[in-house]
Image (cartoon, rainbow, N blue to C red; front, side, top):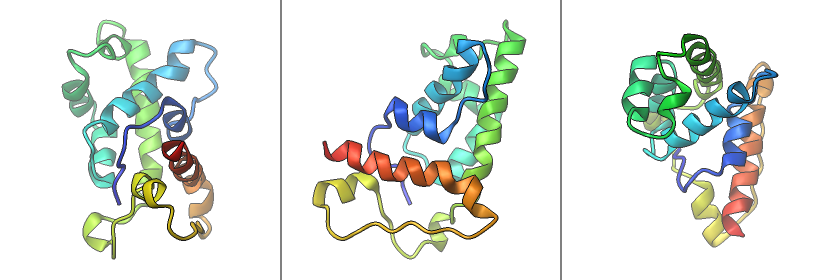
Length: 146
Protein backbone atom coordinates (compact mmCIF):
# COMPACT_ATOMS: atom_id res chain seq x y z
CA UNK A 1 0.00 0.00 0.00
CA UNK A 2 1.27 3.46 -0.76
CA UNK A 3 0.07 6.97 -0.06
CA UNK A 4 0.60 8.00 -3.70
CA UNK A 5 -0.21 11.53 -4.77
CA UNK A 6 0.00 14.83 -2.92
CA UNK A 7 -2.14 14.85 0.21
CA UNK A 8 -4.85 17.44 0.51
CA UNK A 9 -5.18 19.35 3.76
CA UNK A 10 -8.74 18.04 4.06
CA UNK A 11 -7.67 14.42 3.85
CA UNK A 12 -4.98 15.02 6.47
CA UNK A 13 -7.56 16.51 8.81
CA UNK A 14 -9.46 13.25 8.58
CA UNK A 15 -6.40 11.05 9.08
CA UNK A 16 -5.13 13.09 12.04
CA UNK A 17 -8.32 14.35 13.65
CA UNK A 18 -8.36 17.47 15.79
CA UNK A 19 -8.64 16.58 19.45
CA UNK A 20 -11.26 19.19 20.38
CA UNK A 21 -8.82 21.82 21.59
CA UNK A 22 -10.02 25.38 21.75
CA UNK A 23 -6.58 26.61 20.58
CA UNK A 24 -6.30 26.79 16.77
CA UNK A 25 -2.67 25.64 16.72
CA UNK A 26 -3.61 22.31 18.31
CA UNK A 27 -6.36 21.80 15.73
CA UNK A 28 -4.35 22.44 12.57
CA UNK A 29 -0.70 21.81 13.40
CA UNK A 30 -0.79 17.99 13.52
CA UNK A 31 -2.56 17.85 10.16
CA UNK A 32 -0.02 20.17 8.53
CA UNK A 33 2.91 18.13 9.83
CA UNK A 34 1.18 14.89 8.79
CA UNK A 35 0.73 16.26 5.26
CA UNK A 36 4.40 17.25 5.21
CA UNK A 37 5.45 13.75 6.28
CA UNK A 38 3.39 12.28 3.43
CA UNK A 39 5.40 14.27 0.88
CA UNK A 40 8.31 11.90 1.60
CA UNK A 41 6.12 9.02 0.29
CA UNK A 42 6.61 6.74 3.31
CA UNK A 43 5.30 3.24 3.64
CA UNK A 44 2.62 2.87 6.33
CA UNK A 45 5.23 1.24 8.59
CA UNK A 46 7.65 4.13 8.12
CA UNK A 47 4.88 6.62 8.80
CA UNK A 48 4.06 4.90 12.11
CA UNK A 49 7.72 5.00 13.10
CA UNK A 50 8.06 8.68 12.20
CA UNK A 51 4.83 9.74 13.94
CA UNK A 52 5.95 7.93 17.09
CA UNK A 53 9.44 9.44 17.20
CA UNK A 54 9.80 13.16 18.02
CA UNK A 55 13.46 13.17 16.89
CA UNK A 56 12.44 11.83 13.45
CA UNK A 57 9.67 14.41 13.15
CA UNK A 58 12.19 17.10 14.11
CA UNK A 59 14.60 15.90 11.44
CA UNK A 60 11.95 16.00 8.71
CA UNK A 61 10.37 19.29 9.78
CA UNK A 62 13.40 21.37 10.80
CA UNK A 63 14.04 24.16 8.32
CA UNK A 64 10.44 24.25 7.08
CA UNK A 65 7.63 26.63 7.93
CA UNK A 66 6.21 23.87 10.16
CA UNK A 67 9.13 23.99 12.58
CA UNK A 68 7.48 26.82 14.53
CA UNK A 69 4.60 24.45 15.31
CA UNK A 70 6.87 22.06 17.24
CA UNK A 71 9.68 24.37 18.33
CA UNK A 72 11.21 23.17 21.62
CA UNK A 73 11.05 26.80 22.81
CA UNK A 74 7.26 26.29 23.10
CA UNK A 75 7.21 23.01 25.09
CA UNK A 76 3.46 22.85 25.79
CA UNK A 77 2.54 23.46 22.16
CA UNK A 78 5.19 20.98 21.00
CA UNK A 79 3.93 18.34 23.40
CA UNK A 80 0.32 18.75 22.25
CA UNK A 81 1.16 18.57 18.56
CA UNK A 82 3.54 15.60 18.89
CA UNK A 83 1.06 13.83 21.18
CA UNK A 84 -1.69 14.17 18.56
CA UNK A 85 0.58 12.71 15.88
CA UNK A 86 1.58 9.86 18.17
CA UNK A 87 -2.04 8.99 19.00
CA UNK A 88 -2.98 9.00 15.32
CA UNK A 89 -0.16 6.57 14.52
CA UNK A 90 -2.13 3.82 16.31
CA UNK A 91 -4.56 3.30 13.45
CA UNK A 92 -1.77 3.05 10.89
CA UNK A 93 -0.39 0.10 12.85
CA UNK A 94 -3.41 -1.86 11.60
CA UNK A 95 -2.25 -1.67 8.00
CA UNK A 96 -0.36 -4.68 6.65
CA UNK A 97 3.38 -4.46 6.14
CA UNK A 98 4.40 -3.97 2.52
CA UNK A 99 5.82 -7.51 2.30
CA UNK A 100 2.50 -8.92 3.61
CA UNK A 101 0.43 -7.23 0.92
CA UNK A 102 -0.61 -9.28 -2.10
CA UNK A 103 -0.70 -6.19 -4.33
CA UNK A 104 -0.22 -2.43 -4.32
CA UNK A 105 -3.15 -0.05 -4.69
CA UNK A 106 -3.19 3.73 -4.65
CA UNK A 107 -6.10 6.11 -4.83
CA UNK A 108 -4.21 8.09 -7.45
CA UNK A 109 -3.89 5.10 -9.79
CA UNK A 110 -7.52 4.20 -9.32
CA UNK A 111 -8.64 7.80 -9.99
CA UNK A 112 -6.65 7.89 -13.24
CA UNK A 113 -8.18 4.65 -14.60
CA UNK A 114 -11.42 4.24 -12.59
CA UNK A 115 -11.59 0.51 -13.23
CA UNK A 116 -13.87 -1.46 -10.97
CA UNK A 117 -15.57 -0.64 -7.71
CA UNK A 118 -14.12 -0.05 -4.28
CA UNK A 119 -15.61 -1.95 -1.36
CA UNK A 120 -14.12 -1.28 2.05
CA UNK A 121 -14.89 -3.57 4.94
CA UNK A 122 -13.46 -4.05 8.39
CA UNK A 123 -13.94 -6.19 11.46
CA UNK A 124 -14.43 -5.15 15.07
CA UNK A 125 -12.44 -3.89 16.98
CA UNK A 126 -10.58 -2.41 14.01
CA UNK A 127 -13.63 -0.72 12.51
CA UNK A 128 -13.69 2.30 14.81
CA UNK A 129 -9.92 2.84 14.75
CA UNK A 130 -9.69 2.44 10.98
CA UNK A 131 -12.82 4.43 10.03
CA UNK A 132 -11.03 7.78 9.51
CA UNK A 133 -8.62 6.15 7.06
CA UNK A 134 -11.42 4.49 5.11
CA UNK A 135 -13.02 7.92 4.82
CA UNK A 136 -9.74 9.44 3.64
CA UNK A 137 -9.24 6.69 1.05
CA UNK A 138 -12.72 7.19 -0.38
CA UNK A 139 -12.55 10.95 -0.53
CA UNK A 140 -8.94 11.20 -1.63
CA UNK A 141 -9.65 8.96 -4.62
CA UNK A 142 -12.47 11.19 -5.73
CA UNK A 143 -10.50 14.36 -5.05
CA UNK A 144 -7.64 13.22 -7.28
CA UNK A 145 -10.07 12.47 -10.09
CA UNK A 146 -11.48 15.98 -10.24
